[in-house]
Amino acid sequence: MAKKPGKPKATKAKTQEKKPKGRPSKYTKEIAEQICLRLAQGQTLRSICRDEGFPQESTVRAWALDNLNGFYAQYARARDLGLDAMADEILDISDTPEPGVIITDKATGRETKTGDMIEHRRLKVDTRKWYLSKLAPKRYDKPQTDTKDDLPDIGEDYTQPLKIDEDGPTKPHL
Image (cartoon, rainbow, N blue to C red):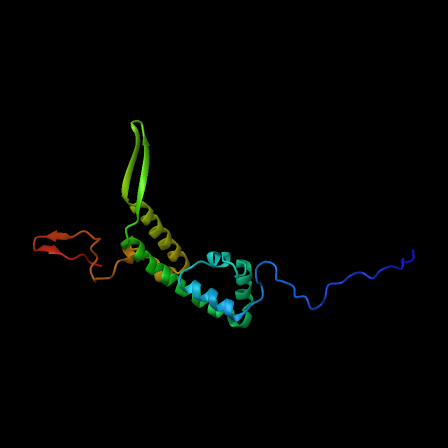
């Protein structure tokens, strides 16, 4: 079939700029610095990337994996500083009362209690402590001292029974 002669198709003027759709995905030093600054302050990558003008989480993680313009070192350091900020936040949470209302349904009716939300604060602290212990166990995990092997050597073996003879108690032979 032959093409029919007709009017030429209208084309968009090349001078008209296209507006970017969606989130930015191109790496820029400015966006990378903003992300790292907020990570160092203890914000999560998820919360940062929800904000308008920031790329998706997967994009930022790809920048780190690909080490675009040395981004990985900056990103890793910011994440590390963010852990310290989270550790500081634990102190703020435990030191600052959180007033609230607890409503309990009982057979006699509803009971309302106003006061500090200690259980909620405990959950927040415990969650952060757990998170820190998993991401940086050498810095934030408490040492386990449950077994005899973990006790410091003080030169005596107090797990052996004390021997008593006619001259009095004697130290066990090791």
